[in-house]
Length: 244
Length: 241
Ligand SMILES: Nc1ncnc2c1ncn2[C@@H]1O[C@H](COP(=O)(O)OP(=O)(O)OP(=O)(O)O)[C@@H](O)[C@H]1O
Ligand SMILES: [Mg+2]
Image: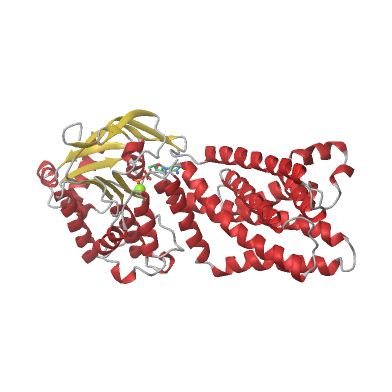
């Protein structure tokens, strides 16, 4: 592993993101619009505080999943990945580079969305704002790792985009956003106890509902971290230096 | 360099792609410090051989030794420059950003990037995004991204395709200059006229080496007037045999 090469790659990915102002705009504006929509829908009820926080955990995951799976697939089909793997850049450097770039993008997204939710939509957070942002960044890195993994199994952009409903939607359905997790049928509850997005959403909801959550929050974060490491390791198996 | 003056040593290389054998026990040596042309008809296995040399091709059997090490070894990654057949640069970045990035991976600084851009005559387009370049400009940007690290061995898959005669001449002159500096080049092409620009020629057809010779040797052997008819003569001779 070579941190310098990882940073150089992260810088390159950031320049690519910057070169596409419309994507940057969508990345920042869409969560705010959806947040505003929710606040409006649940105007005058306490539901927004719960769902709004959960959504702050879902956005970075979904967005980074899609962006990474498409970006990595583009690296594969354009031949740039083949070329990169003949240079001193290692597979770990490649993935960490992507994690750095999309991590930064996630910070921007999370800061803007959280600020909008709190100050414009009136979302109440009991805990610290920085914890909210930290969890959002972890969610983004998790989405990135999942996207990388998914792109290893996609041959075309169409397939890559289809992995979104296949891998992400079930997690959104089971993460406690629609039905509280402890009210799910047993099998589904076990499933939701395994899936990482459940912990991301739990963590978000803990930050908003209570100021003193250190213990539970740490265990949520540890589960998310474990999933990140596992999917990055699996994802690295899909980056083959030699191809048929 | 070990292995005396051999840059690439391929022995008994067999490759299977898509369920079919596309290289049949290819054995060939590429001398160092020369421009070696890899010529042959479309689908003959040029890109496959090149991919094996840079270590990105899964091979069935055989050995490929590059600059004294097995192809694809970590110690080769700074010493070998590779240009894929279709331009492999980032379309959403400028020429300069691309060349600087690929250069930075092999430790080349910004002045090396400017030099590489000038070598492929893209100085006036350095700030243009690759997606706004013409096809030939794109492939030159891709070439610059390989030149920037001043590698000892350049492996170029059809770098002159789609270029006009003037640019082609300039690039082949550049290749000769690089070889004169002591660097080795393996350049594929399916334009037979370009054979005369090389120090040595490898003719690859249907996954087999048809000839390993010099341009003069090829003409003398076949009695043909130009490279193209020499190549056709060789194929006819093989078909007849
Ligand atoms: N990705 C692939 N999967 C399966 N088979 C492939 C693949 N790429 C090439 N082949 C097959 O391998 C053979 C050799 O292809 P290769 O690309 O090496 O030819 P080439 O000499 O470079 O041709 P060209 O001049 O058209 O670039 C062809 O028969 C082709 O069908
Ligand atoms: Mg080819």
